[in-house]
Image 1 (cartoon, rainbow, N blue to C red):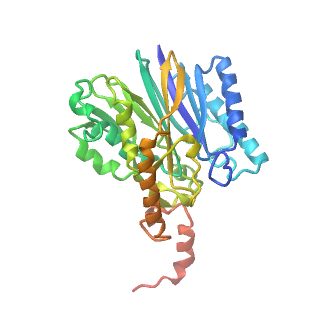
Image 2: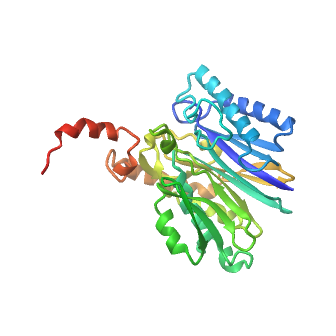
Image 3: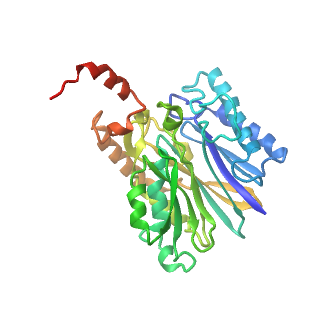
Length: 364
């Protein structure tokens, strides 16, 4: 019987500012999801956070985009928003772009990543969660995990991975998708996913079995809201071991703190710092961007774990490099490349400034 593993997240209020999550929000989420488990809606769940984002990790038998599961998650965010407003938390209900539930939470603000599969004899699943960055932030790590032999030696020496993986890439602005078979189409794919502000890896599939290997949230808050309301803070689920990359191969891309969009007011580039959950409290200039990882073994849908995968001194150098890179970028202040290019600033104050100057601009 197939199991669905999903993570649905939302920023419903920051404590303090945009830096972290208040314990009462997590308590309420645990209370709601425990009721859903007792009712039989969920097999199991885990509530956690990444910075000021509330993360609902769930397993069930109802398939992706199930209305009842999504409604329960939406109601949990609504309940949490009420507490956030009571506590006067910053940005209470920030990701709740709609006032009424409409079947599932896609397009309503919260980020969603879900996958359905037949549970293997040993099923290892890693859940990545990010704060202060955008949906395309998973492009480089997913490429390294599933297409780069310098990162994943299994692509070379493991016969069950040697034929490669298929990447499903979404154009988040034109709402189109295209599949690339790797390794032979790597160069074509890199043309697109090297531009993560527009193209995002939505899913990865094993080419021989067709089984899903990874799925990410590709929701762009600014495109849904038509204005800047906060960065996307994406999530990603990756299956590991067997005919998928090993845990160490999946974590290895984060040893390099790549530059991503986000940071302060979602308008800057900064390094993606891998941290333990207890360190996911971005505060310097509301950053730098953070990524956490919860690791689980599945047992008949039950979540055995989590293990805090970045709670490891082996990532100390990555955190140190992220701080150095963050310092270097910060010294640019309001200048590019620290600040995003103008075409990515269309949902901030830039349109208002240009409208204000319209009458003063003269032909050369």
